[in-house]
Image 1 (cartoon, helix red, strand yellow):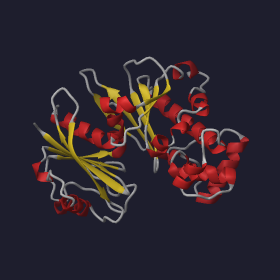
Image 2 (cartoon, rainbow, N blue to C red; image 1 turned 90 degrees about the horizontal axis):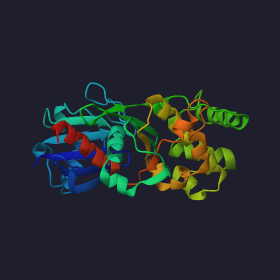
Image 3 (cartoon, rainbow, N blue to C red; image 1 turned 180 degrees about the vertical axis):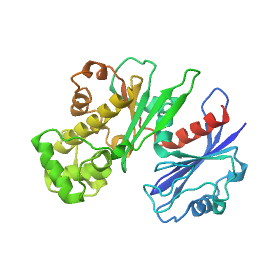
Image 4 (spheres, one colour; image 1 turned 45 degrees about the vertical axis):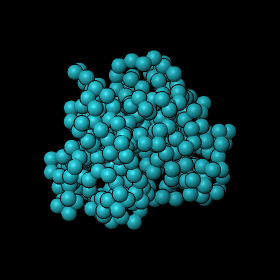
Length: 318
């Protein structure tokens, strides 16, 4: 059967998987490996480390190679990763990747595809119930930044992923308390406005917590201090709900919203929060329809890796 070498390349770690593509079913994971990438300076060096770890599938042996990376893919390459100081160009001879077999995809496209797999659905938590209906499915993920992607159903079956850098779009502040937070953000970061990557993310959780408590902590430490009843959780859940509502309305996500990303997965109460649901439904024209959209929190650890393999299977026609 055709083989797929999939990679979910992150700023701290990269996960690699050897998958078997099976016609009519989901790719099957045969072997996986995590490689530290914080000190890596190139894609070629990353593959060298993978080889040194004893990973069983060489790039030249795979029928498809799919690299899921943070950053916009243009002309088949990413000039610089969002979370690293180097870029990815599969055509660069230094990378020794087989021509015509290597695909580059935005990491959140892989996340969105991974959320639709049966393995992901098993571990999903219902945030808002609603009827399952055909339509666009949105994925929203607060992590190092805010990831967004929409999956558009195609008439003949399958989906068309729509990559997005909507995490850099402005995020509205709507009352005097939030206006004070905006002034705090402007003074702290030098940015003229709030946006998803800045606020609805791990660093954003730290900023919200610092504004409300005066405690300036890194994201993991800030998350460790909060709980479902904390003011920080209520504020962050409200901003997350606002971001999900805006994106669901932009793409008409009647097929559902899948929440993923490290911040939501490690702190599920931020999604399963009354402020999230209230804000998500807060629309004068479409509140009733938003209230009927199913929202799930996908908690699987390999969602992006399996989604990259799914992208490879789609390219193979499996």
